[in-house]
Amino acid sequence: MDTTALIAACVAVVLGAGLQRVAGMGVGMVAAPVLTVFLGASVGVLLSNVAAIVTALLVLRALRDGVDWRRVVTILPLMLVGSVLGALTVREADPAWLDVIVGGSVLLALGASAILRRRVRIQGRSVAVATGLAAGFMNTTSGVAAPAWTAYALATRWDHRSFAATMQPLLVVMNAMSVATKLGFGAIPSGFAPAWWVWPVLLAAVLAGVTVGRFLALRISTRAASRTALTVATAGAVTALARGLLAL
Image (cartoon, rainbow, N blue to C red):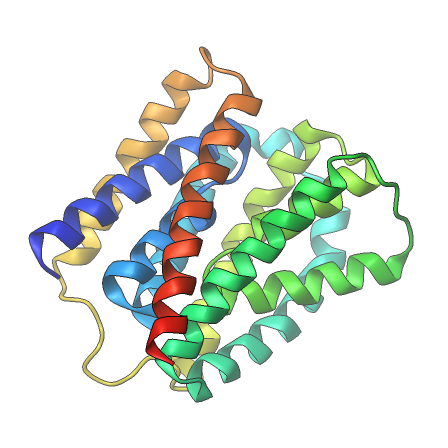
């Protein structure tokens, strides 16, 4: 990883972790597209998954009283199935197609979120099943699942405080699933693992982001933080998608 890539990765992780502390999500949407551009789809998403685990654990400490554990238990098995399917896709897909999957998945999820902000009401277990499968698949292939859950929360009128808190244990387990399934299925190419020193730098960026987010949570609105995350994620997703299409 060269200096430019390292700086971009750290900025993305700090911003994503800070936004997650404010809005309940952010690392996947912000960091995954940026890391993918500089490191490639497989390694970039892997780093994003690890950063998301650490961030969610730290944020969970502050929001744990609002977690809806019943939803967590219901959703987790569905995400595991989606994660396995995603890992198989990462192992078999061409790198250019992975870029297309990363960029396209993020843009589709963000588009769905925007449409459902019109307060379309959906109900039923089948919707939760479909969302869980999609979230597990997207998180493993693109490092982004929060927009899918945001769309679901908007459409089902899920209280934002409960949603933000419940997302943290889901993100911990979901990203751990993604890392485990990709490593277990050999989805990370041999010799492509990041250097050892990248991990402590990544941890420092997460800690810095959560600390900044704790400060900002008292001063900016959740809506403003979410808009910033969506803007950065969209830019990164468009870049990854364009790179993949050009390489095909």
